[in-house]
Length: 64
Image (cartoon, rainbow, N blue to C red; front, side, top):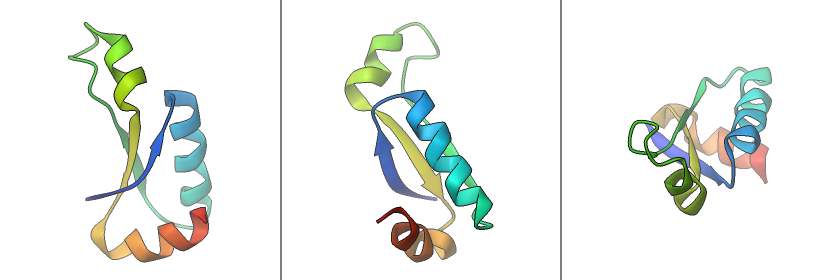
């Protein structure tokens, strides 16, 4: 899995995942908020959108 985009919020990351999935690319979000104990941590670090290695190049082109 490779990080293709870092969003400022979970909502933005979900929108990016939706766009990629429309084009057949499986995307997931990943965030570090200490298991929900520190939600502000996700705000400062962002929410990563990750895709499979083989889909990375196509995903980058779609998000440009």
